[in-house]
Image: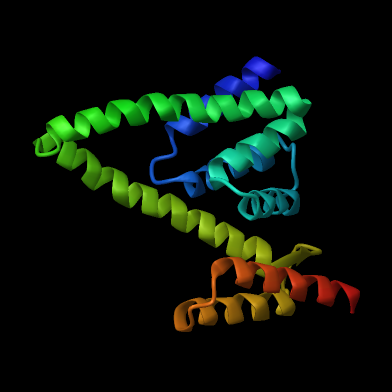
Amino acid sequence: MILTLLLRFSGFSLLCFGGGYILIPLLFADLVTQRGILAANEFLNLVSIAQLTPGPVGINTATYSGYLEGGVWGSLAATAGFVLPTLFLASLAVAGLRKYRDSFFVRGLMTGVRPAAVGMITYAALLFLRLSLFAEKEGTLKIDWISLAVFGITLILMLKSKISAFRLIVCGAALGALSALL
């Protein structure tokens, strides 16, 4: 189990070009779709918790999901599996980019990696949008109007004001808790 977590998250780490948000569709496919360890809503909670805790979302998600599968040792294995390949590859990339940044191959590689990374991040955003704003009941999607309102207000405030993301998340959490009480 521990070795499996280490190897699985090493594989995820090798695919996370562009940041931890690219990990979200990979983890969703693994934990929800393929292995059925989590329901879609539980996965959404996992990533939400990972976003609220200090540190990169990829590492936090690996740590949390490793804990779900293997306790403290699973958490350590998943985190190490996620971090170690990244450290190794980042060291190679910095050295290689300095030396070969003007090469045709490196420029081509970066030209292909960037849009692929944006595509995966967009998929993660759409996945979150669907899971956060719509509730599936009896085979149909129903709009969660409170979540839609929080989403809209947050988006507008992010675009039009200088309110910090932390404050917006705290306000969103407070509105969600208030709506649960009502």
